[in-house]
Amino acid sequence: MLTDNKTLSGIKSDTERSFLVLWGLIVLISSVIGDTIILIATCRYRVINLHKIIVAIIQHMAFCDLVQSTFRVFPVLTATIADKWILGEFICHVQDNLMMVSAGFTMILTCALTAVKLIHLKFPLIARTWSKNRGHVICVALWFFVAVGYSPVFIVKIFYIRHTAYFSYATYECTYLHQSPLAPSWYKVYYPVSIAVIHFLSYTILVVTSILILLLANKVRSRIGGRVRLEGTITVLVTVAIQFLSYLPLGLVFITWMTMGIQHSGKVWRAVTFVLYLNIMANFYIYCITARSFREFLKSRISQVLVFLRLTSATEGKPPIRVRPPDLSRTSGDHVVWSNVIQNHVKRLSKEQQYT
Image 1 (cartoon, rainbow, N blue to C red):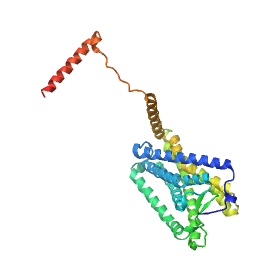
Image 2: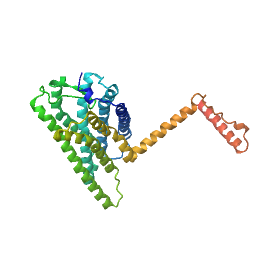
Image 3: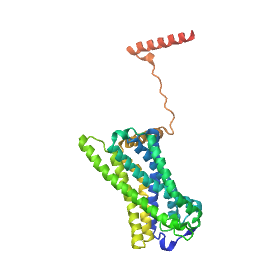
Protein backbone atom coordinates (compact mmCIF):
# COMPACT_ATOMS: atom_id res chain seq x y z
CA MET A 1 0.00 0.00 0.00
CA LEU A 2 1.47 3.34 -1.11
CA THR A 3 1.59 6.27 1.31
CA ASP A 4 2.83 9.84 1.28
CA ASN A 5 5.41 11.30 3.66
CA LYS A 6 4.35 10.36 7.21
CA THR A 7 7.09 12.45 8.81
CA LEU A 8 6.01 15.55 6.92
CA SER A 9 2.21 15.21 7.04
CA GLY A 10 1.34 12.73 9.81
CA ILE A 11 -0.08 13.44 13.25
CA LYS A 12 2.69 14.30 15.70
CA SER A 13 0.69 15.36 18.74
CA ASP A 14 -1.24 13.02 21.03
CA THR A 15 -3.62 15.88 21.79
CA GLU A 16 -4.51 16.28 18.12
CA ARG A 17 -4.99 12.53 17.69
CA SER A 18 -7.21 12.30 20.78
CA PHE A 19 -9.35 15.20 19.59
CA LEU A 20 -9.74 13.77 16.08
CA VAL A 21 -10.61 10.31 17.44
CA LEU A 22 -13.20 11.80 19.81
CA TRP A 23 -14.75 13.87 17.03
CA GLY A 24 -14.79 10.86 14.69
CA LEU A 25 -16.55 8.73 17.31
CA ILE A 26 -19.16 11.44 17.90
CA VAL A 27 -19.81 11.72 14.16
CA LEU A 28 -19.94 7.95 13.62
CA ILE A 29 -22.32 7.25 16.52
CA SER A 30 -24.52 10.25 15.76
CA SER A 31 -24.79 9.35 12.08
CA VAL A 32 -25.39 5.62 12.46
CA ILE A 33 -27.99 5.99 15.23
CA GLY A 34 -29.49 9.28 14.05
CA ASP A 35 -29.89 8.44 10.37
CA THR A 36 -31.27 4.99 11.22
CA ILE A 37 -33.89 6.65 13.43
CA ILE A 38 -34.70 9.09 10.61
CA LEU A 39 -35.27 6.24 8.15
CA ILE A 40 -37.42 4.27 10.61
CA ALA A 41 -39.42 7.35 11.62
CA THR A 42 -40.12 8.43 8.04
CA CYS A 43 -40.56 5.02 6.38
CA ARG A 44 -42.52 3.13 9.03
CA TYR A 45 -44.16 5.73 11.26
CA ARG A 46 -44.23 8.76 8.88
CA VAL A 47 -43.81 11.22 11.71
CA ILE A 48 -42.13 14.17 9.94
CA ASN A 49 -45.05 16.37 8.89
CA LEU A 50 -43.42 18.11 5.94
CA HIS A 51 -44.18 17.99 2.22
CA LYS A 52 -44.09 14.44 0.88
CA ILE A 53 -41.34 15.12 -1.66
CA ILE A 54 -39.22 16.83 1.01
CA VAL A 55 -39.62 13.74 3.23
CA ALA A 56 -38.50 11.52 0.33
CA ILE A 57 -35.40 13.69 -0.16
CA ILE A 58 -34.72 13.50 3.59
CA GLN A 59 -34.77 9.70 3.38
CA HIS A 60 -32.23 9.62 0.54
CA MET A 61 -30.00 12.11 2.39
CA ALA A 62 -30.10 9.89 5.49
CA PHE A 63 -29.08 6.90 3.37
CA CYS A 64 -26.16 8.89 1.88
CA ASP A 65 -25.02 9.91 5.35
CA LEU A 66 -25.06 6.26 6.44
CA VAL A 67 -22.92 5.36 3.42
CA GLN A 68 -20.43 8.11 4.26
CA SER A 69 -20.28 7.21 7.95
CA THR A 70 -19.66 3.55 7.08
CA PHE A 71 -17.21 3.88 4.20
CA ARG A 72 -15.57 7.21 5.02
CA VAL A 73 -15.75 8.14 8.71
CA PHE A 74 -15.14 4.62 10.03
CA PRO A 75 -12.05 3.89 7.84
CA VAL A 76 -10.56 7.30 8.64
CA LEU A 77 -11.24 6.76 12.34
CA THR A 78 -9.47 3.39 12.33
CA ALA A 79 -6.53 4.86 10.40
CA THR A 80 -6.27 7.75 12.85
CA ILE A 81 -6.19 5.37 15.82
CA ALA A 82 -3.67 2.96 14.22
CA ASP A 83 -1.72 5.79 12.54
CA LYS A 84 -1.75 3.79 9.30
CA TRP A 85 -4.18 2.21 6.83
CA ILE A 86 -5.19 -1.24 8.09
CA LEU A 87 -8.28 -2.10 6.00
CA GLY A 88 -6.56 -3.28 2.82
CA GLU A 89 -6.32 -2.01 -0.74
CA PHE A 90 -9.86 -3.00 -1.77
CA ILE A 91 -11.48 -0.92 0.98
CA CYS A 92 -9.13 1.91 -0.01
CA HIS A 93 -10.68 1.97 -3.49
CA VAL A 94 -14.20 1.61 -2.10
CA GLN A 95 -13.67 4.42 0.40
CA ASP A 96 -12.51 6.97 -2.16
CA ASN A 97 -15.13 6.21 -4.81
CA LEU A 98 -18.13 5.92 -2.50
CA MET A 99 -17.05 9.08 -0.70
CA MET A 100 -17.00 11.02 -3.98
CA VAL A 101 -20.38 9.70 -5.14
CA SER A 102 -22.25 10.07 -1.84
CA ALA A 103 -20.81 13.52 -1.07
CA GLY A 104 -21.73 14.80 -4.53
CA PHE A 105 -25.20 13.27 -4.33
CA THR A 106 -25.81 14.84 -0.91
CA MET A 107 -24.95 18.25 -2.34
CA ILE A 108 -27.33 17.77 -5.27
CA LEU A 109 -30.07 16.53 -2.93
CA THR A 110 -29.67 19.69 -0.86
CA CYS A 111 -30.21 21.72 -4.05
CA ALA A 112 -33.31 19.65 -4.79
CA LEU A 113 -34.53 20.27 -1.23
CA THR A 114 -34.40 24.05 -1.63
CA ALA A 115 -35.88 23.92 -5.15
CA VAL A 116 -38.86 21.84 -4.01
CA LYS A 117 -39.46 24.12 -1.02
CA LEU A 118 -39.36 27.16 -3.29
CA ILE A 119 -41.93 25.61 -5.65
CA HIS A 120 -44.06 24.66 -2.65
CA LEU A 121 -44.13 28.27 -1.46
CA LYS A 122 -44.65 29.75 -4.93
CA PHE A 123 -47.25 27.26 -6.20
CA PRO A 124 -48.82 25.64 -3.11
CA LEU A 125 -51.88 24.26 -4.93
CA ILE A 126 -49.77 22.49 -7.55
CA ALA A 127 -47.25 21.17 -5.01
CA ARG A 128 -50.08 19.80 -2.89
CA THR A 129 -50.94 17.27 -5.59
CA TRP A 130 -47.42 15.84 -5.71
CA SER A 131 -47.05 12.40 -4.17
CA LYS A 132 -44.19 10.81 -2.28
CA ASN A 133 -43.58 8.45 -5.21
CA ARG A 134 -42.79 11.47 -7.35
CA GLY A 135 -40.18 12.46 -4.78
CA HIS A 136 -38.53 9.05 -5.03
CA VAL A 137 -38.60 9.27 -8.84
CA ILE A 138 -36.81 12.64 -8.61
CA CYS A 139 -34.18 11.18 -6.26
CA VAL A 140 -33.61 8.13 -8.47
CA ALA A 141 -33.18 10.44 -11.47
CA LEU A 142 -30.60 12.42 -9.50
CA TRP A 143 -28.84 9.17 -8.55
CA PHE A 144 -28.67 8.31 -12.27
CA PHE A 145 -27.35 11.79 -13.09
CA VAL A 146 -24.56 11.47 -10.50
CA ALA A 147 -23.68 7.95 -11.68
CA VAL A 148 -23.42 9.05 -15.31
CA GLY A 149 -21.32 12.08 -14.41
CA TYR A 150 -18.98 10.06 -12.20
CA SER A 151 -18.63 7.03 -14.52
CA PRO A 152 -15.71 8.52 -16.57
CA VAL A 153 -13.83 9.24 -13.33
CA PHE A 154 -14.54 5.75 -12.02
CA ILE A 155 -13.39 4.12 -15.29
CA VAL A 156 -10.10 6.03 -15.27
CA LYS A 157 -9.49 5.25 -11.60
CA ILE A 158 -10.03 1.54 -12.05
CA PHE A 159 -8.44 0.92 -15.48
CA TYR A 160 -5.75 3.61 -15.73
CA ILE A 161 -4.58 4.91 -12.34
CA ARG A 162 -5.62 2.05 -10.08
CA HIS A 163 -2.05 1.40 -8.96
CA THR A 164 -1.52 5.05 -8.00
CA ALA A 165 -4.00 4.81 -5.11
CA TYR A 166 -2.29 5.71 -1.87
CA PHE A 167 -3.02 6.53 1.76
CA SER A 168 -2.56 10.22 2.55
CA TYR A 169 -1.31 11.14 6.02
CA ALA A 170 -2.51 14.69 5.40
CA THR A 171 -6.20 13.68 5.56
CA TYR A 172 -5.93 10.01 6.67
CA GLU A 173 -7.98 9.08 3.62
CA CYS A 174 -7.24 7.18 0.42
CA THR A 175 -6.89 9.05 -2.87
CA TYR A 176 -5.37 8.75 -6.36
CA LEU A 177 -2.68 10.58 -8.32
CA HIS A 178 -5.11 12.27 -10.70
CA GLN A 179 -2.32 14.02 -12.61
CA SER A 180 -0.41 10.80 -13.11
CA PRO A 181 1.20 10.21 -16.55
CA LEU A 182 -0.89 7.04 -16.71
CA ALA A 183 -4.12 9.07 -16.82
CA PRO A 184 -5.58 10.12 -20.19
CA SER A 185 -5.02 13.73 -21.17
CA TRP A 186 -8.74 14.55 -21.29
CA TYR A 187 -9.14 13.25 -17.73
CA LYS A 188 -6.63 15.76 -16.37
CA VAL A 189 -8.98 18.49 -17.58
CA TYR A 190 -12.31 16.73 -16.99
CA TYR A 191 -11.74 15.88 -13.33
CA PRO A 192 -10.89 19.33 -11.91
CA VAL A 193 -13.30 21.17 -14.24
CA SER A 194 -16.23 18.87 -13.42
CA ILE A 195 -15.67 19.26 -9.67
CA ALA A 196 -15.39 23.05 -9.98
CA VAL A 197 -18.52 23.30 -12.14
CA ILE A 198 -20.59 21.07 -9.84
CA HIS A 199 -19.58 23.04 -6.76
CA PHE A 200 -20.14 26.41 -8.45
CA LEU A 201 -23.58 25.49 -9.81
CA SER A 202 -24.64 23.80 -6.57
CA TYR A 203 -23.74 26.72 -4.34
CA THR A 204 -25.23 29.22 -6.78
CA ILE A 205 -28.51 27.28 -6.71
CA LEU A 206 -28.40 27.05 -2.91
CA VAL A 207 -27.79 30.78 -2.47
CA VAL A 208 -30.43 31.90 -4.99
CA THR A 209 -33.14 29.49 -3.84
CA SER A 210 -32.48 30.21 -0.15
CA ILE A 211 -32.88 33.97 -0.71
CA LEU A 212 -36.08 33.42 -2.69
CA ILE A 213 -37.42 31.09 0.02
CA LEU A 214 -36.81 33.76 2.66
CA LEU A 215 -38.56 36.42 0.57
CA LEU A 216 -41.55 34.22 -0.28
CA ALA A 217 -41.93 32.92 3.27
CA ASN A 218 -41.91 36.47 4.62
CA LYS A 219 -44.44 37.52 1.97
CA VAL A 220 -46.77 34.61 2.73
CA ARG A 221 -46.45 35.18 6.47
CA SER A 222 -47.31 38.89 6.19
CA ARG A 223 -50.25 38.15 3.88
CA ILE A 224 -51.81 35.53 6.13
CA GLY A 225 -51.08 37.50 9.28
CA GLY A 226 -48.30 35.49 10.90
CA ARG A 227 -50.37 32.31 11.17
CA VAL A 228 -48.42 30.26 8.62
CA ARG A 229 -46.15 27.48 9.85
CA LEU A 230 -42.48 27.93 9.05
CA GLU A 231 -41.35 24.48 10.18
CA GLY A 232 -40.48 23.28 6.68
CA THR A 233 -38.81 26.54 5.70
CA ILE A 234 -36.63 26.61 8.82
CA THR A 235 -35.67 22.94 8.33
CA VAL A 236 -34.55 23.54 4.74
CA LEU A 237 -32.64 26.74 5.51
CA VAL A 238 -30.81 25.24 8.50
CA THR A 239 -29.82 22.26 6.33
CA VAL A 240 -28.38 24.65 3.74
CA ALA A 241 -26.54 26.62 6.46
CA ILE A 242 -24.88 23.44 7.78
CA GLN A 243 -23.88 22.50 4.22
CA PHE A 244 -22.17 25.88 3.77
CA LEU A 245 -20.58 25.81 7.21
CA SER A 246 -19.05 22.35 6.72
CA TYR A 247 -17.64 23.02 3.22
CA LEU A 248 -16.51 26.63 3.68
CA PRO A 249 -13.12 25.86 5.37
CA LEU A 250 -12.20 23.28 2.72
CA GLY A 251 -13.19 25.67 -0.05
CA LEU A 252 -11.00 28.44 1.33
CA VAL A 253 -8.00 26.13 1.77
CA PHE A 254 -8.45 24.64 -1.71
CA ILE A 255 -8.80 28.05 -3.41
CA THR A 256 -5.73 29.51 -1.69
CA TRP A 257 -3.78 26.40 -2.62
CA MET A 258 -4.83 26.49 -6.29
CA THR A 259 -4.67 30.25 -6.90
CA MET A 260 -1.93 31.47 -4.56
CA GLY A 261 0.18 28.34 -4.36
CA ILE A 262 0.05 28.26 -0.56
CA GLN A 263 1.30 24.90 0.73
CA HIS A 264 -0.87 24.10 3.73
CA SER A 265 0.32 21.71 6.43
CA GLY A 266 -1.16 18.31 7.11
CA LYS A 267 -2.80 19.65 10.25
CA VAL A 268 -4.75 22.21 8.18
CA TRP A 269 -5.91 19.59 5.67
CA ARG A 270 -6.99 17.27 8.47
CA ALA A 271 -8.89 20.05 10.20
CA VAL A 272 -10.92 21.03 7.13
CA THR A 273 -11.53 17.36 6.27
CA PHE A 274 -12.89 16.54 9.72
CA VAL A 275 -15.07 19.68 9.64
CA LEU A 276 -16.78 18.14 6.59
CA TYR A 277 -18.10 15.41 8.87
CA LEU A 278 -20.42 17.98 10.46
CA ASN A 279 -22.67 17.67 7.41
CA ILE A 280 -22.80 13.88 7.85
CA MET A 281 -24.06 13.91 11.44
CA ALA A 282 -26.12 17.13 11.53
CA ASN A 283 -29.45 16.11 10.00
CA PHE A 284 -30.67 14.19 13.04
CA TYR A 285 -30.07 17.17 15.31
CA ILE A 286 -31.63 19.55 12.77
CA TYR A 287 -34.89 17.61 12.73
CA CYS A 288 -34.89 17.32 16.52
CA ILE A 289 -34.78 21.12 16.72
CA THR A 290 -36.95 22.19 13.77
CA ALA A 291 -39.48 19.34 13.23
CA ARG A 292 -41.96 19.21 16.09
CA SER A 293 -43.52 15.91 14.98
CA PHE A 294 -40.11 14.23 14.90
CA ARG A 295 -39.31 15.62 18.34
CA GLU A 296 -42.59 14.32 19.78
CA PHE A 297 -41.92 10.92 18.23
CA LEU A 298 -38.53 10.73 19.94
CA LYS A 299 -40.01 11.79 23.29
CA SER A 300 -42.68 9.09 23.12
CA ARG A 301 -40.17 6.37 22.19
CA ILE A 302 -37.71 7.42 24.86
CA SER A 303 -40.52 7.41 27.45
CA GLN A 304 -41.52 3.89 26.41
CA VAL A 305 -37.93 2.69 26.70
CA LEU A 306 -37.53 4.28 30.13
CA VAL A 307 -40.78 2.73 31.39
CA PHE A 308 -39.70 -0.66 30.10
CA LEU A 309 -36.28 -0.38 31.74
CA ARG A 310 -37.84 0.79 35.02
CA LEU A 311 -40.29 -2.13 35.09
CA THR A 312 -37.57 -4.60 34.17
CA SER A 313 -35.19 -3.37 36.87
CA ALA A 314 -37.97 -3.32 39.47
CA THR A 315 -39.00 -6.94 38.87
CA GLU A 316 -35.55 -8.38 38.17
CA GLY A 317 -34.68 -11.21 40.57
CA LYS A 318 -38.10 -11.15 42.25
CA PRO A 319 -40.87 -13.76 42.01
CA PRO A 320 -43.91 -12.79 39.98
CA ILE A 321 -46.57 -10.93 41.92
CA ARG A 322 -49.74 -12.98 42.46
CA VAL A 323 -52.90 -11.14 43.26
CA ARG A 324 -55.21 -13.07 45.60
CA PRO A 325 -58.89 -12.65 44.65
CA PRO A 326 -61.05 -11.18 47.39
CA ASP A 327 -63.30 -13.46 49.40
CA LEU A 328 -66.72 -12.08 48.54
CA SER A 329 -68.48 -14.39 50.98
CA ARG A 330 -66.98 -12.49 53.94
CA THR A 331 -68.09 -9.08 52.74
CA SER A 332 -71.24 -7.50 53.98
CA GLY A 333 -74.05 -5.29 52.76
CA ASP A 334 -74.40 -4.61 49.07
CA HIS A 335 -71.19 -6.52 48.30
CA VAL A 336 -72.83 -9.75 49.46
CA VAL A 337 -75.85 -9.10 47.26
CA TRP A 338 -73.76 -8.44 44.19
CA SER A 339 -71.56 -11.48 44.88
CA ASN A 340 -74.62 -13.71 45.01
CA VAL A 341 -75.95 -12.23 41.77
CA ILE A 342 -72.64 -12.82 39.99
CA GLN A 343 -72.32 -16.39 41.29
CA ASN A 344 -75.90 -17.27 40.24
CA HIS A 345 -75.32 -15.77 36.79
CA VAL A 346 -72.13 -17.82 36.31
CA LYS A 347 -73.93 -21.02 37.37
CA ARG A 348 -76.77 -20.33 34.91
CA LEU A 349 -74.35 -19.77 32.04
CA SER A 350 -72.49 -22.97 32.81
CA LYS A 351 -75.76 -24.97 32.77
CA GLU A 352 -76.83 -23.44 29.45
CA GLN A 353 -73.46 -24.35 27.96
CA GLN A 354 -74.03 -28.00 28.82
CA TYR A 355 -77.17 -28.14 26.63
CA THR A 356 -75.75 -26.32 23.58
